Image (cartoon, rainbow, N blue to C red; front, side, top):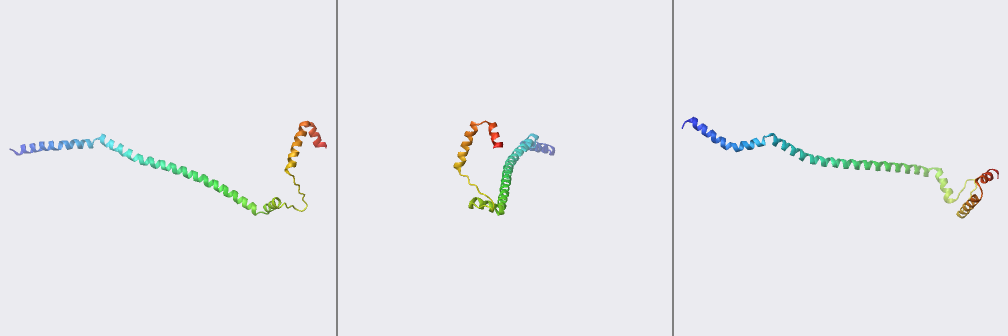
Length: 144
């Protein structure tokens, strides 16, 4: 056998051996397979990104809620400071002395109206206003 026949025979048998590998190689190097792999990679990458994005939105909502609470607490704190300043003032001491201890300043007259008298006055004014006209009431108000 000549050398040329041996080479052709060996190369043809080598082609037969490598032919299934070349089919797999062609399949894995094809554009469709690479596009499929890229799509799978993007899908696998999208799930963690979506989860991260949703966590971020939840965190931003919590931060905004905390900011609103902080603003509310600061407003409440400011009101308490103003109330504390009022309580430290002499006006607060005077108001407390007037209401709790029934004290009065020199030269002042204190008038105490009981609830029963208020109710009686309210009922009598309703009865009198029903019986007299508005014009008569104004006349009495200005000239009597």
